[in-house]
Length: 154
Image (cartoon, rainbow, N blue to C red):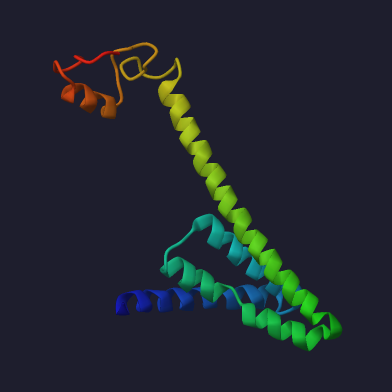
């Protein structure tokens, strides 16, 4: 428990330092703060980090209290719309990052399948070229089947 809290604290310090430098470069105004928060939410969805990277670094990098404070000091009557808009935009950024991670993971799995099962795959492991090759699960089932290896019906 203490170790995890320490790691989150170190990550938050790193994230806050990066936020400080970023806002020093781009200015502490409404738009840069909103972009910073949306970037943090997108990275949280895309990377799906653990406590050090998530609650720590990205939590320290984002600055929700700052955009609420800026909205109430700079916007006047539009402050509630701005706050609701930023919260919704950050939510959609997180969902977009999460979906992008899922799509890229699916593409990686499909590419692996195509490379290992296409006609260009290694002849020994290609089921089309070598019908006796079975996945490791099938091989374990064959060994446990009645009659020994390849004793079951195909």
